[in-house]
Image 1 (spheres, helix red, strand yellow):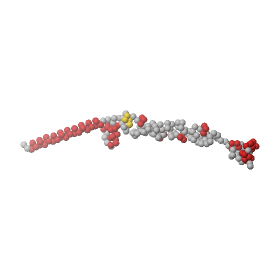
Image 2: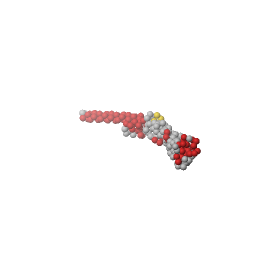
Image 3: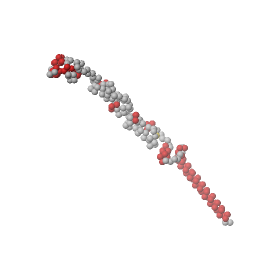
Image 4: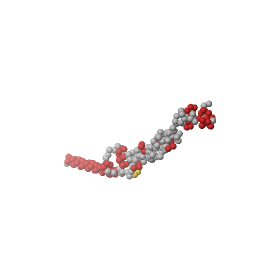
Length: 200
């Protein structure tokens, strides 16, 4: 039985075995007690109170690391470690709850993300073009209808309302009818005059 083995069996012999860990080749049995004994390596624990010895390799042991498994230590400073942060680069963490972090959200304060597609986020858009709700121009609906139907008329571009355009069309039609009636009457009178000249 080796000296170290006898020490383990009879603890009272510890004093006699001090400094013999290397000789007995038992440095690994109790590295803390054997540290410094001749023949035993010096074991230095960089994180004596951290069993994982700085798991995220950020130079901070777990007992003093606010984010022990986050090497960036809360990139956006929102008090949520990156390892559990749904938006690690967004301090507001998707404030409009549309499942898009600010870095990827074209409208970070608009849940519908510009629903009417006019390139103005809803939170600052005075007019909802889909419903007409808000401070919308009076010709917006007509202009959208013309654009959608492919109508190339530019009447509304000159500030004319739909009622004005209809009125102009009606007036033009009436004038056209009057002109036709006048032409017919004149032709009839000329025809009658020619007949009278040929039949005295």
